[in-house]
Length: 112
Image (cartoon, rainbow, N blue to C red; front, side, top):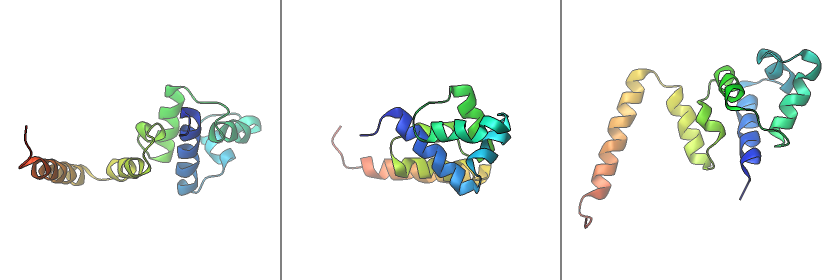
């Protein structure tokens, strides 16, 4: 099992790569000095350092992912979180209705 810093770093790298940004570009957009931007993001991605929650929120906003994406261990859940986050409100409502229906159907016939 990966430790929290490794998971966080892997998720950051995935989101950064999907956004088409270099480490330096992301760091600069996050407000880091250009001289240290690449190094700082690289250290986050390698799990050497972990950003505090406020920085995580800022990076998530830049990368258009929910902050919780960085912290989840489950790859499928992480993908679902990003997909849901990027949906318009109607799509989010539709997904929640579907999920509730599926949960209800899964529980029908089970002993309580």
